[in-house]
Length: 246
Image (cartoon, rainbow, N blue to C red; front, side, top):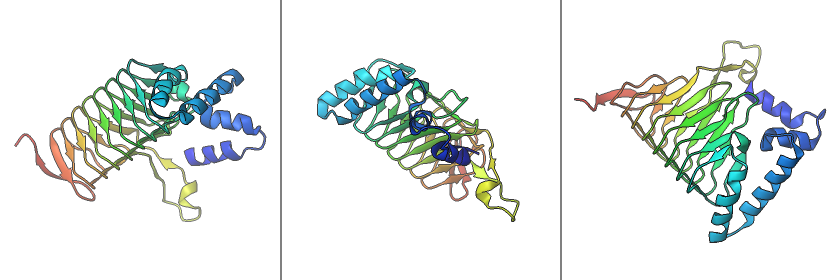
């Protein structure tokens, strides 16, 4: 279970505090890489204004698996396990974003070209993978999560509104003799969002759901089952309103 695994990594006194920090945050137990991570993050987070933008653009690529041309990193960006983060060309990672590719056997985070992550958007892996296509926009304070081997995949031209939530996992809850938190995650394989789909502000997309191409998910909708191509859905739980083909 991802929750218990993270807790054990934080509290495991059989490992030094440095080793726990490396496993949770840095993504490498190599001392040289850890020192490079600390130096680059310190310089990038402290440098103000235009100088900071320039330094982050030049230095952060030294931590990432890949960084394309013209990548913009805003102030306060947090990178965890950056060696498993690949970023395409002309990507904007706005102020306060979190890119966390944590996991023991996952591939991590892949961003295509011309992706825009709004202020404080969160991409978080816990042994899962997040794959984002080209020309995708993710609104401010949105959260994307992939856990336990799940894959969260956004096709090209997808739009995600502010404060949306995609991913995570539910828990088994059949037993009454133990807490739900200890019954294990009910993983359903992740989420796929098709080409050109639009997810409205504050919408929630549950694990195991596929959103069809050019579909629209209305503001505040909670989607717990697949959405067909070109459909418009709304409500809690989301229901079909009509199709864009009509």
